[in-house]
Structures are given as C-alpha cells and as structure tokens.
Length: 281
Image (cartoon, rainbow, N blue to C red):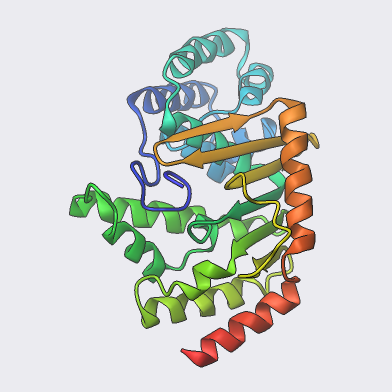
C-alpha cells in the first residue's frame, strides 16, 4: 500500500496547505472562545490529541466536527469552519483520502486489516519501516525519509492509546518467509509481532503458505467500525486509494474478511509459528 503500509509513492501523507489553513482557523476560533484543546475536545466528543492533530494540519477533519463545533463555538464560527472545509473537499487526492481514513482509524471501535504484500503499517517495527523506505522508488530525500518513519511510528500509538478498540490483522505467511531487509530486520519484526500480539485488544493471524480456499485474492483491504456502529472500508494500490462508504460494498468486504479469518491460522497458532520462525533465524 502506498500511504498506509509500504514505501510507495506517498508514504505517510504530509500536511497540505488547505489542511493547515483549516487547522489554523479552528485554533483561532477555539482561542476566541477562550477554550484550551483539553476543554474543547470533550465538548465535541474527540480527544485533545486528535484535536491537536487537526489544528496542526495532520488529520482530515471529520464531518461530525463541524456540527458539534456549532454547539460549542456558535453559529458564526460554524459558518467560518464550514467555509474553510469546502476548500478541502475540492482537493480529493491520495493524501486526503488517507487523512480521512486516519481520522476514522483514530475514533473507531474496531479495525480490521488484510495485507498480502507487506506487513500492515500499524505492525511494522522501526527497522522494517526503514528497510521499506530504503527500497522506495523514486528515493526519498533524507528529511522526507525521517519524516515518513516518524509519522508511521506515531500512528502506531493507536494500538496502545485505544485499548477499547479491537484490532484484527491478517498477514500472509509468505511475508514472514521473505526476510525483507535480512535476518536482523526479520528478527526485529518477529519480536515486535509477538509483543504487539500479547495486547488484549490485538489479534494477529497468519494466512498459511498453502491454502486452497483463500478469499483474499481480490487484494488488500481495511475496515473500521465507527462509534455509531457504522462500517467503512478502505483500499489502496500503488498510487491510488479509495474510502468506501457504500453499505453494500462494505458488506461484501466484511464477508470476505470474515471468511479469511476462518481460513487463517488462529491467533495462538500464529504466535507459535512466529516463535518457531524466530528460533530458526
């Protein structure tokens, strides 16, 4: 995947001018109301850390934020925010799609991910991240390289900062066998997957190398359940991506993911496989 997992064309998306402008407008209106981020955030039902990222231009503002802000900041401020938001909707590209997905991720109660070509971005240890970006074409400048690594590591805090969110990952055993970056990187990957897999809200399942009945042939997918119990899908390939909200399409993705969970090794069997492979390095 380009912006989520791998070292593709965009890596982790950088802030756009329109996102920074929206964030600056939100901050100015919040300051005008004499509210700190810590005071404002619970009133609009988001975390202070998430509001900070929106104000910094690092996250695409969710639609609910505009409605909730009107109750806190007033009708005039809401109209100003709405006008600022219109500039965002005119610039829908890869980064903005991902930023919308990142906003959904940070406020979801369930997150599912299937990745056949690279370990999911939320599960990558730093040596693996660096190995991916070192192989990226065209190459990244040093400053861009470090920015992408830092952004991905920051995003992984979700696993621990949202203990009430259920995370499910299906990864291909072939990715574990590939030895991307060499034995040291692969050893760090195995150790990291074993550590993250011990979190009570994380389930990791490996799809066996040989599996005649494999429902993942249509490619990678991600699914999120919102606090309103609405499911949203997300897919990426090379330099394109798409947020999927159509209920029928999302239902089909849920069916495929559910089938794959039944076809993959169990969480416990996957942990045993990782331990065996770690010992064999």
